[in-house]
Image 1 (cartoon, helix red, strand yellow):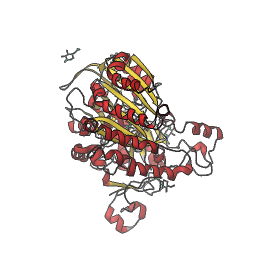
Image 2: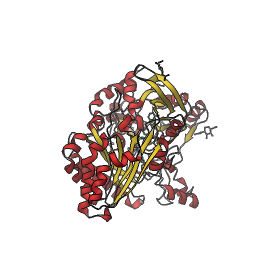
Image 3: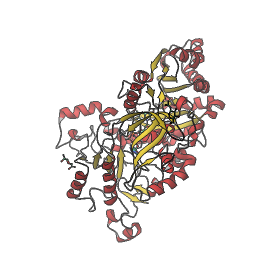
Image 4: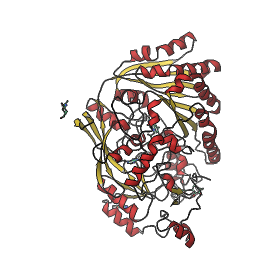
Length: 572
Ligand SMILES: Cc1cc2nc3c(=O)[nH]c(=O)nc-3n(C[C@H](O)[C@H](O)[C@H](O)COP(=O)(O)OP(=O)(O)OC[C@H]3O[C@@H](n4cnc5c(N)ncnc54)[C@H](O)[C@@H]3O)c2cc1C
Ligand SMILES: *[C@@H]1O[C@H](CO)[C@@H](O)[C@H](O)[C@H]1NC(C)=O
Ligand SMILES: *[C@@H]1O[C@H](CO)[C@@H](O)[C@H](O)[C@H]1NC(C)=O
Ligand SMILES: *[C@@H]1O[C@H](CO)[C@@H](O)[C@H](O)[C@H]1NC(C)=O
């Protein structure tokens, strides 16, 4: 089995089976049309859409096609293989998801040349949108022709939510406008703001803000989009301890709705849609074409990175270092820091420590002072660097080089958990022991430590448990690009679900997970990803998308559909 079967594929489906009994059960339009179905639009019909969108309709050619006959090209294929695990290869394309699992090896760079390159779980067509009207055309076309609709921005999504078998994609990558609004004024906020087109990345937003003497909340990875899955899924940042989550920055969205209306969603206009778009999950309520976010007067950023090698100390000392760090975590956050860290059996990196309106000296002495004392007392060697920089330069130094960043993204699989502050305060040893227990299993723990409460009042759909979270903890295992390792990778993913994440769950009962950085097989997903927001989100979803045009894996109301292993999507 490749693509995870969400439920049995044997649902009533008129188009797939032609069975009258099943057709009666399912009714018309019970399943989305696939290219192999009779209901698939004719070339003429597609040409009509292409005219409407001014020739910007793209028929998918999977990027791996030069690795397969009859389009094999040795040089091009070799170049693809070299870069296959780099996000920067997939990001600018119209259809390639970064998470290889969701590409389902249907046109993989490493599978045999003789194996045909087929669409499989790739979208079939994309509209390269340059204006809201293009989105309107795509949305109406998908609705009228009973097609699966997907929204793609950067393709970063861990749940493959920006790809889908036989789908028409709204491809927002080229919506690159940035605008400074010196004094945005509304009932809840007056001050500097910025408007970003839906295709703007964190790096581009940071550059534009920097030029205007401002700072905006962006993701750790500079190539993650601002207005797509990041802000709509909640969005944590190296700036979160000071400013809150990305969703907390939203002032208004320009959107295209499921019925093809262009409108504004803000606390004043269509407030329920605004609420849902701010943290309720990407790709599920409307297509955002631009967002206006709070901007903050730029200040110096105190920064640091630090590395400790496991091989330099005994296993007991390494465990003690990890325990000490988690014991000190609450006071580090309270000193104003947001800290990203990576921990595995080989090294423990803080990368970076970020404090707004501060200096490298402050980070050295006030944030990390007690931790460094502990290292010195125990004769632990470490490498560290401290800095006082503009945010843009801090971003470039520790998470860059801009615009891509150093984080590769395609060769891991993920699990995650939000760790409440109360657990870190009351049971730091238990938490550290759970994390340390994963290291011999080659799990990589990636933490973002901070306070995730904005300094201003907000009402949005962010999983409420974020507000009592101290650490957003991700668990990663390495993904192999070798085709023959596929089943072993699936076994690893199952182990993430059945063994690795449960070890953290055991110390965080009744806890939550960040929907953008979790295990896509999370069994307790409604509770973990949405919590108390789920019910209101389901109502909003029904109101704004009654026909279920938008669908994402483990999105709100996604259980109203099933997606079979072959990609056939039918009403449940
Ligand atoms: C290397 C790496 C680092 C990361 N670092 C961070 C981090 O520091 N903080 C953090 O919070 N997250 C981080 N993430 C997770 C990231 O927030 C999610 O992957 C997010 O979904 C990416 O959004 P995107 O729009 O760029 O990507 P896409 O994969 O293109 O889209 C993601 C989802 O959003 C939907 N979507 C995209 N655009 C729109 C739109 N205009 N309107 C409506 N729906 C839309 C898509 O349909 C899909 O469901 C990281 C991911 C990676 C791979
Ligand atoms: C859409 O039209 C443009 C311009 O004529 C053309 O280049 C492109 O190939 C067309 N797309 C499809 C899918 O036919
Ligand atoms: C994924 O790959 C498997 C095995 O090749 C295939 O049976 C399945 O149909 C594919 N799924 C999609 C959505 O293409
Ligand atoms: C911004 O606009 C508001 C409302 O019009 C006004 O009260 C405020 O003084 C303005 N701020 C600046 C910095 O111009």
